[in-house]
Length: 189
Length: 180
Figure 1 (tube, rainbow over the protein chains, first blue to last red):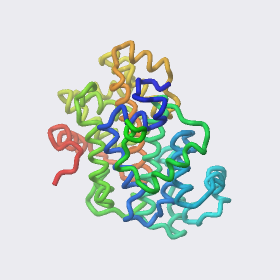
Figure 2: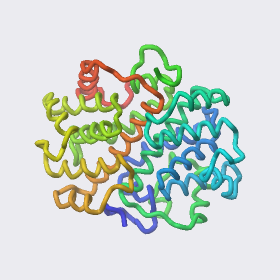
Figure 3: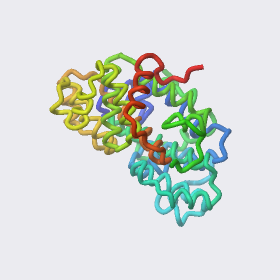
Figure 4: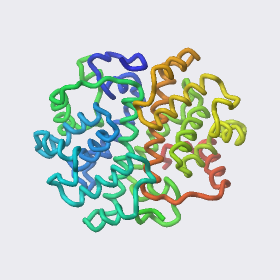
């Protein structure tokens, strides 16, 4: 049970119930998620951006966000879940580019606090081919998920335990995006 | 020195908005929607929440700017803002706001740090669900902005007059939504 009274809470876990509760906040939040994670004017792929979001949500121990965004990342990366699992456990050993590893290290520092990012991490990312825009967007996405995770957990929302439940939502994100998401409409209300 | 090459003469968040201009309207609209409304929590209360969280995150820029906006809404009472940052439980503010600041301070640590007893205290002091919701989203948002600025190594501003001027601009009409 969330800390506040949410509409259709049983059918709307995580941020979905919050979006139904406060649509005026939901609209700009969804627009922000769309531009951060799906905008095509970006040299980081949608899969890479969802991977950063998933990793930060995992570090923040936010079950809902790491599951939804993990499912979206799986869909983009054509992964059955094993790659995302490996990245969460130890991205340094995962079969991903050196650039993405360096960006995940920056994201991991941002999760602790902005001041944890080091010059050395930024240099490593640059040496691995990351552009200023990619470094910027990594910090921005990691920081944004420190918000989304706190929003979802700070109001005590619930999250399904079964990872399979999230897979269709990940596919819908990949197909339809975030901008036009309407939680009530999603459950036929 | 920022970790990335930003346009000259653009300080703080404005430098980042100039670097990635397509993001500016989205961040601006979102910020405007949670800080520049008087429904339930006043604008001053919203800025106080943002200022406290920024102080806890040691983000000098956000603490400075949003503290200045809050002071501007409160007849330039900078002493009150300092008192709240130092020890809000002893500051001359409502018990309801104290209980909401306690929730915000937990959100700063992590979402899971918010406790049922904190929520019950706030509700017992008259906080509505919308006010509790807005407190959590504002506190969470500052965990976002603080990390965004500090994570890119954005240079602090030493002169408090710069904050005051920016605070007046925001409080007296400019707001956060991007202007044409």
